[in-house]
Length: 107
Image (cartoon, rainbow, N blue to C red; front, side, top):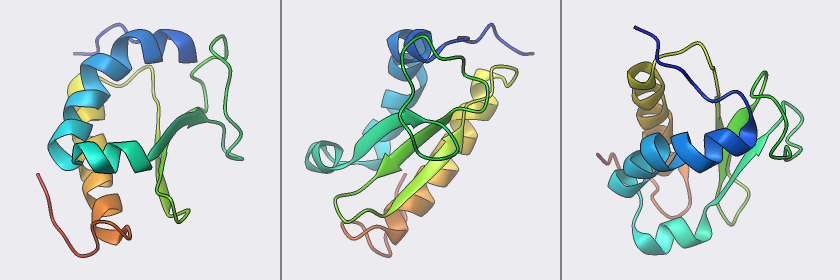
């Protein structure tokens, strides 16, 4: 079953980021790591999107202080559970390949 998902970047950050993303981040990153990881909603070119931009072709990007990063496509048609599973898997890989968590499998 597909839940109603946010249609704009601002709506995603106000609701779904807090509800879906923060719990995953909290299980995989320490408080200190959260402070050094830049999180942004960007387009395919890496340009940050404004709050009123549609989620169509938007990516949730995580980048560490050294510029290593990963991005997860935001799909308004995807269920919350599928998005969270995909985010957790991709974020685990990012941590293992980052300078702060090199080789660690967390979560």
